[in-house]
Length: 456
Image 1 (cartoon, rainbow, N blue to C red):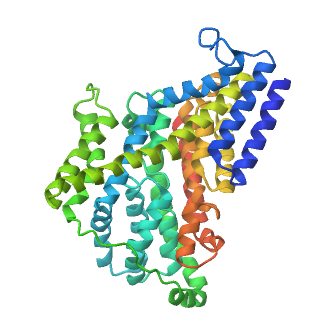
Image 2: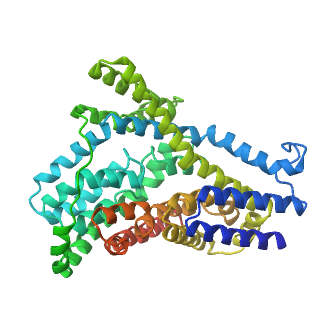
């Protein structure tokens, strides 16, 4: 009992530190190590008799080592490869070409109001190419925002659409989907995305687009005089250099997605994973750059950005996952996870209660901290065990929790994506949040309702 109380206290302190914008990775590692050593002091085993190093005081650090090994042999390597691929695609201008191709038809739409849901849905699809919400916002503010303003959308409407593009797109290339599929026991991430994620998130995205239309047009009418001044003052300066990239380069960023679906449909028994597919997709892009630039040395130099991108994936995502897993190991060593599992197994209505509880906690931490990844990766590892004890499908808890970590991010005034967009149009982040929270809450309610109906 004392161990569980200590675990809860540390968990609360951890949540507070993340909410106060302390580095999430360091906080989670520290919390995990403290709990593991408390477990050792209390006479608990943190590794098991077969896995122990033989020196109890060194076992907590061996836990971290084991987590790194585990991640690199599963989701970690996939995430590194996808980050490297995205970095190279951005450098050669292929990502810009995708945006150009997808957004060009928008300039031909004569009725500005019709642009609102269409821009939201197209922007959401772009998250498949650029998984980082902040990076996507930077690119869209430089490329799409001027198009939207020229088409007649108000400054705040255009900004709100861009700030909410990176949310819950169902893509097998998303790092959160890769991790969720691995933890939930799916051999192929496409199975998780196609059969579970897409049926929940696609209707939610549709609802959010429609709500965006009504909410933005309502606020535009209500704030007409304020917007007239803001529309004149909020000017975005274009600082992105032209790369003279051929338009057909737009095929390269989406090639991994096409190949993943192709192998999933026609060669389901083939053991071809995301790493192999991504590396294969990289080759034609490199060859095309070699032919276009006619400079082998420069092309090889540019290819280093792929490995630099892998480093970003390691520091931004993989280390965060390992840190969260270390904290989970500490919670398990102190017995808190077993205590929760035993308690929920005694309640008949544990299904809805667990789903709402974990969704609410994830959403709250995300809103306060502005970062959804830390909350999601912290809890996903413990979901299967707790769900099994409660007698429910772990997806019913994990999937809504995953969606909350993305939806609440763009409602937070301290989220990087909100700060970037609001700073670009020179308004207070709270002004932008007023534009984003209603459509996003519509998505939250839709996800919870559909998850409950599908998995009850």
